[in-house]
Image (cartoon, rainbow, N blue to C red; front, top):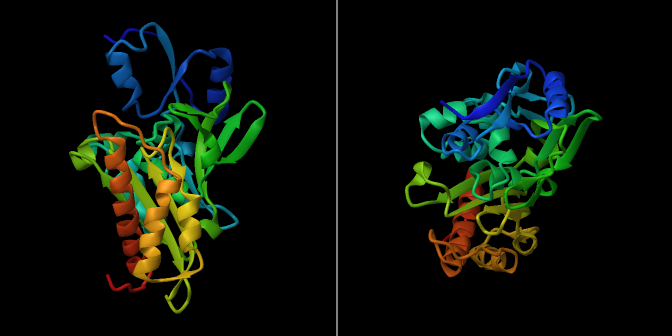
Length: 295
């Protein structure tokens, strides 16, 4: 038996907020792919849980009135991968979350749980950073939306108030329209392992496919939280599609990232693969956008 004090089940967002206020020490549980492991290991012994898994209004992908893409926080990884809106506008997100765990985990795990964990290795996190995602949080005082880069405070800690739950992730229309992206996860066992390093790059090419009008790059495990690389983005934005620029872009990521030594990989190795993945991701994003670059 799991050693928990109580399990409360919310049937609506409002009910979840009420339960958060009533039981401030309780742990939110969605799909449970992470929390239940912690419970089984005894790390949540005697704790209360608030399940939000039954709130169907927090599932699915749709357009908002302004054309933004809304991803409900309880949307499973499998749903995201197969969703036609995701496949049309930001297929790279579907590819990224398809690298999380095995099929059972992808059917159960949710995009909200993956981001609320606050871990830098989350495959969705770096990709969402590259899409300038907005996190929607709902609490007693209503709804607030913040950029995902502000949502991550430090390793394992996100900007979630005691009365709040994450209800959606929003991708503004100007952040996805005209962009193509690619994500590479470097890991020892691919999907069945957490990332040693994850790199996600989006590019928007000019009409003639000769100029990179905008480039966005984000990493996981290159620092304590998922991060963008402004130096690299500046090195490529507005520049011609050429190997010289692409290599300068890849080299510039070293100005921004700060990976650590761990048993999985040394800092020096992570820095090396960061430049390699940056180059490969940008080249593939250019190809997906209809551009060409002689290697």
